[in-house]
Image (cartoon, rainbow, N blue to C red):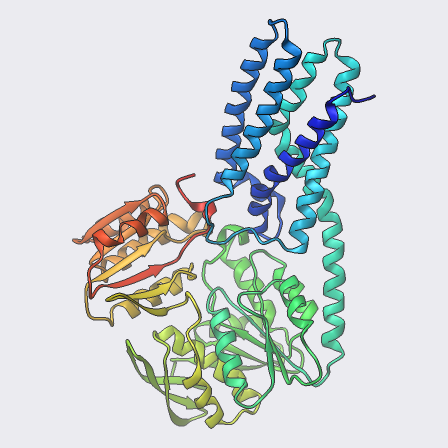
Length: 531
């Protein structure tokens, strides 16, 4: 097998095209921990593939027409060349719009990008060499290039799975190293936080409270995967008293894997609802997986008192110390006399029967509960109440989680990172406390499996009780919210947009000075109905 003269030029073009074609596929799998199957769910990729089919049809038509002219070799060359230029331009333009969550060129992403590009190019080169041997008419070999975009998803799947074998082994090495580092620090208090909601907020508030007295390292932002925790642990040294890790879970086995790495002394369970029901398959799976964090050997657990029944059942027969916190009068740590305003919140903090006055800049009763969870850990670690109260007062709102923003006369409650039913209801309850015309902007809730339609219908009913104006993002996806609004007799305005950008461009026509705008969830680009 051999390449004909000039074929190497096209091989280079195949590699360049592969590079640009790989990026949107890589972006799709990066959203869910590099699971190759994600490419079958991504609507953007389906649209891009449709454009590929159209481009192939157009250029193959031109190529077929040139077959009957005398200088067909020259025109065939030009047709193939312009085909590659068109493909590169299309994929380049596809990646131009600013994404809400852009592709991150991590070391793993770069390795995948290069490997898949090389793998696809190798496959095309091999096919070209075979065509040169078995096709009597060299003009027909151009069909290899025209067919390449059509079979590229298969090349990506094969190349992606091959590189993932290496990546899994590489990640296992990182996890073992992380476990060794944490094990080598016997005096380090390891704290793990999980739940369907509130993980990052509790982590940040707890870190603030503990830092009033102790030296603390926490996983940054929403880093809650094995690799995210491994990156954070690299910063640990003997000067730290505590390590706070957020545990994320989308599937059965995720928490168990993180527990093997960290082996926490203290566990925090924030709450459980239908979040990620689509990937967990059932509410029972969610409960079982989240409760795996309670398996701490010699430490203690801090649990939202709404889960008392679930936790009692899971820990039956086990000698586990549990601190329940919340608003129930039987909880060891609870809050009473909660007063929430635009300026923040105040409440009576009751710890083991003693009452203390607490104030915070945070808004919403759910944030008070998040503070109680953080307080439970700090108290269990022996942090004195004055330090705890000081930390509560210093706690900062987490970006995009009930973050209060003044936008030129319009008060914005940015809860765009919230995407679960419990958080949505908490945000709406907080919106009730504000004076002024109330506006809700939402694309709805996703990844809720068979319950998604019902939950979004219920969300529409809840919104109808609070809002004066509703802006829905996504025509098809928000239909159940609209039906919920109408079923509840909502008398305000409803406006529907294909994308967040089109909704934002309509702000000047819809919003007025004095309005309160709640941004409830903001979905990644893969849910954009412009696709």
